[in-house]
Image (cartoon, rainbow, N blue to C red; front, side, top):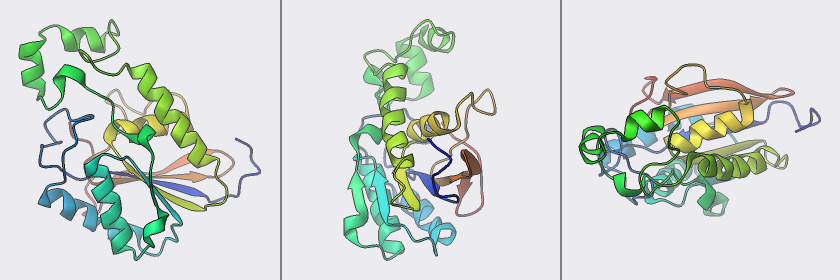
Length: 214
């Protein structure tokens, strides 16, 4: 990236809302679960933070929970349907045999998995997508979006893992805490270009709550 990029360009990153499959407690990666009513309320609450921004591009994961979240935002902002576009590279990581499980259910089924995963001895959930492959595909998608100077403000609607890896790709280095970037369900994170990408907002919800959930 070069400093010739117009100053003030922003990427607005939204994590989808709560789902019928309980994204707050379950490992839903490639599981295609719809939004719950709670999730729809979380997404609509973000409209207060997004109104007045001239989005000309809304890019989203093709998974149902992100696609519906993007459509709700576009409708609430009176955006033309043609600004919506899906990018399969923005979908969440696959959790393989652990899809839809809680942490406790994974511990019961694969007793040593989390210890090995957190120690770096394995880089994927059983039967799932390796973290390096996930990081590469998300990074490629986000770097393309970041390089698109034709659009000043771009809205990206995806998943917790996608948003976290987007931040790593654009900010570089490590997340600001051992738990990683906090990206709660139905939250907004904003990056602004000022000679380099800088974090402007992290994990802010429409009700002004912040933080991250499992």
